[in-house]
Length: 207
Image (cartoon, rainbow, N blue to C red; front, side, top):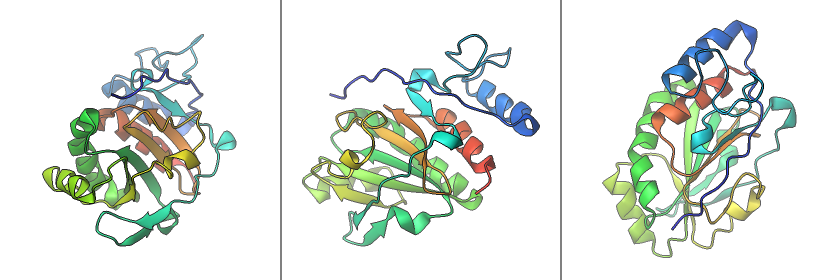
């Protein structure tokens, strides 16, 4: 059973030229209030987007580089996070044994297909599945087309800052910006509606 994480709040800065558009997207997702303040805001400032989903969004000036991730995927092919440099990358940690992972898998696959043309790539980290067959069965059941690194011992997850990724809290999702830095982290299952505005925000940034 996954560990419940308390959302860590961080600032989300929206450029004036695009703020109205982004706010409209967030409002449609239920992550932005009518007065322009983010969900869970303090003194009128948006300090976390999607607080209910445990989202933490980092200001570009404070972002840390994502750790090097490389290895064999579930079919034995080599894949690395660095292969996607220059694109926005969604890294999703999941396990075939995880109920919330099953709940979010279809949304993630749909969003992966819909945003590929915008310069977004998805990379899974299959964790604590000793048997690749079980993980491959999960992939087939949800028609997942993006690769997943096989990480049976959770070693890859330990490379991320513990303040952003709790290796015991699966699923977890991170958004990596075009410069290879961690832009956002979400603990727990995520929906299309919650993740899409995060991607829109990071895609708007200059590389």
